[in-house]
Structure formats: C-alpha cells, structure tokens
Image (cartoon, rainbow, N blue to C red):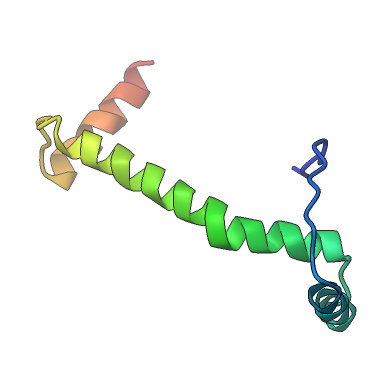
Length: 84
C-alpha cells in the first residue's frame, strides 16, 4: 500500500545544509523531500516503533499465560481449525 502524504512540514536550513542535501538527493536520484522523510523514519519513527514493540512484548510477558510445548499447541490449532 502506497503512503499518502497529506501533512506539510517546514524546516529552515542553512544554505550550506540545503546545498549538501540537494547534492545528496541528486546522487541518490531522489527528491529532497524523500530524503527528509527517510531520515525522519530512520532516526525518530523507527526508534519509537521499536520502543512500542518492546513495551508490548514486556506486557505480554507479564501475563504469565499458560503455554504448552509446540507439539501440543500445534495439535490444538489443528483441532480448532478442523472443528470450525
């Protein structure tokens, strides 16, 4: 599924930063906006996503839910699928 970009963000750069970013974009054959989105994703959003996943895992581990061995669980899954 292709992302739909609907929110515009403005950032002020020095002329040197802008020129360097334009050079990077030219070398990567991508628009400057794509480079900025990729950087935001890699530096900030990916880290937040990883933290959320870790927090979810931690919550799941505190459930102390009963878990059988794999063969037992597989049999239960198969039986449930057959009985549906």
